Length: 355
Image (tube, rainbow, N blue to C red; front, side):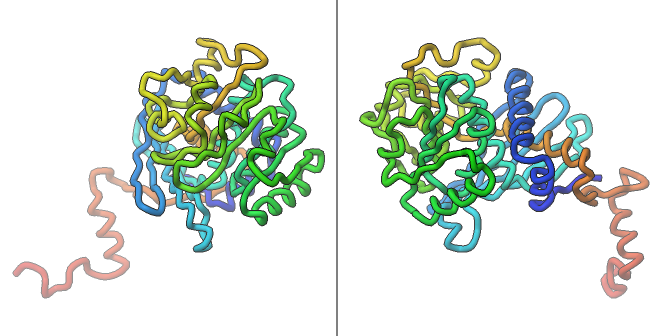
């Protein structure tokens, strides 16, 4: 049988564990998988773009398990009463192909993105970073703010979004769950960035924007560029990338979708796994400007699915799903129809039978 985790099931798992344990465990699983990067079969995600959004399939596998995520990005969805991002995924046994888990990943995507952002900042931001600017206060903003607060000790977030209601919602949630985290509403992106140690950009509009310009740079800043995640969608002036050392998840994908799409093909970037395995260094000195060009990669969802499978089994959460037929004779697939026909009636009306 296949275990099914609905959106409510995933929320129950996180609520029972608490956000600190959830982020701690997710970051640890993602880091462990990134450290064994060469063991995975990887490919850039498959994307179907339209004028209003994108639908993507994100597969990855190691020697024992295969995982994939279906995910969309439609900035106009909130006006229709739908989330901008919706996702589900599956984890299967490589030896047999049996689907082990099917799970909603809408909430888990926000959690794993924030956990990965904080994991990257551990090795790329200054160790004494305490202030973060958060430009774009949409559905993922609470998760980013809380992950950096809980995992890195960020104690101040400077918030900007042209939608004042989005910022008000974010501040209300932060007051409720993290009263020790100071938050300040800013009138512009430039005001939010002034004096920030870390800058996270999370805008949703699907176009080339200049949220961060060279004039906003300060020595030692770390940029967590999350919003630029498809062809033609960026947030940074190319001159910022030429100034910073750029780190990515999977170069073959980021060159197509991330801020790096603005740069020549030979422009140097470093994959995060290389820093985590000490193959190369992260931040080299205090005043260096670093940029994590984060578009989201399938390995992070593989890690999230593996964590959900373990956490659900441990908590007894989920539903057994009759997704794959159970057959007395695995070669007798037609027998499934015969059994259904015995209960519902003949498979063919008598007048259709051959005489």
